[in-house]
Amino acid sequence: MKVTTAEQMQELDRKAIEIYRIPGIVLMENAGRGASEEILKAFPEIKKKRVAIISGKGNNGGDGFVIARYLMNRGVSVKVFLLTEPKALHGDAEINYFIFHRMKGEVVSVPSSKEYQKSKKEIEKADLIIDAIFGTGLDAEVRGYYREVIDHLNTLQKPIVAVDIPSGLSADTGKPLGTAIRATLTLTFGLPKIGLLISPGVEYAGTVKVIDIGFPKRLIEEEQIQTHLIEKEEIYKWLSVPRRLDTHKGDYGHLLVIAGSVGKTGAAAMACEAALRMGAGLVTLALPKSLNPIMEMKLTEVMTEPLPETQKQTLSLKAYSPLLRLCENKKAVLIGPGIGTHPETQTLILKLIKTLNIPIILDADGINALATLPKLPPLTHPLLILTPHPGEMARLIHSTSKEVQDNRIGISRTFSTSNHVYLVLKGFRTLIATPNGDVYINPTGNPGLASGGTGDVLSGMIGGLICQGFDPLLSLQAAVYLHGLAGDEVVREIGEKSLVATDLIKKIPSLLQGGI
Image 1 (cartoon, rainbow, N blue to C red):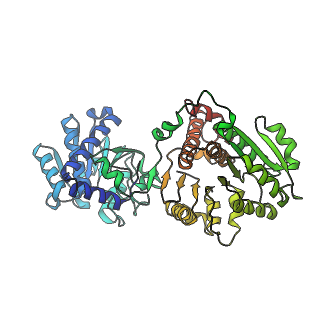
Image 2: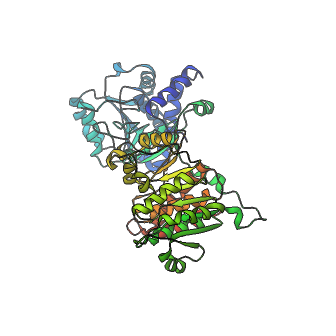
Image 3: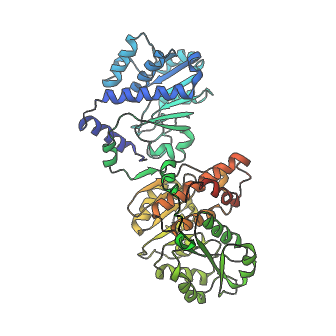
């Protein structure tokens, strides 16, 4: 599903009205009707309770009047508190105000703090608040009277439904513009907005539902929108294709994992096991020779290849030629989990990146090796996938974790297009950025994934799909989505604090039921 900025949504509105000749009032009607239906589903007991709609003077307020009309027709006790004088309304909002007014709907005009104070107690008695103050076009800080109203609504400890977007929230950044409504449910129109899906916007939006307001499918498809939301239906559409009966392990790829050092063998093991669980036909672990005995005991289905090592028991440059031979019959290579930061090992990694022509997934210390370069060289590899967490991303671009987190989408997109790589920026709402500028937001996952080793599991899951020859973008979407979904399943069973990385691997088979 495409995800828009405020400007892109305004352009969709404009084209729907001017090119497809859909009157704006029809779009508003569709929005209000769809929102009212979702409100009745989410709050089935609403007919026995009181609803207060807080409306602004723009189109968001007009949506509020449409919602009020439909709820009133369904027998709901609803009252609109209009934060302006009725004469200040214009266009479609004004029309819907008059329709509601002529239906004998209750509208209380509260254009200033003084009038609002008189209505405070009545608003506080409402069982449900509907926020229709500001829409997605807000781009200035909320001040004065409007800030007072929003801050008051947030103190009520009542469920709040936000119309299109929580008032005060930036549709582009997800940051509150001074202040913002903290909604229980957000009913957004046409397409989701970026600010609803990323931090900190998700904390203000609550549950997000998208209301179809009648945009032509062709209009959405033709619009050059390059931010997307990963959807379950798309993932399982291709995962559900069964394997052929006449098949063997060689048909499902051979992944080489170059990983492990003293004290970090677990990272290598988890990456390998995750790859096998994702359906890889064969997995070989290349590791320092002194660690081979323990890994032979630790891993049953994974083959191991002991290689020359440094005095610190990390892979040495002497492993370069053997690794090139190992790659000859492999479909993909994963480099980095627990591999260490020994200078000689880092030099080895950089040589491999320059030389190999099979798909490379670069994770953890593999990324840290790349970050040692003062400037990234031209990366001409046919398929290079980087999977950094924010700290590793900051080292790659010689920045700070805070700067990365403040602009996750922008930084991911710029890095991927500039370096012609796929980037998986891990963290809350993990992102996938592609060389052509598309960015995909993952909706699954939770704070329980903030546990050592979960990133190694993800890199193994990616490698397990890539080595099978699947489309790189589909592979990344499936791995990231299922990784987060596995975390969600584990948390439902044992809670966030007890989640460990191996729990995710155990969940992969059930998530792939009917899949690869």
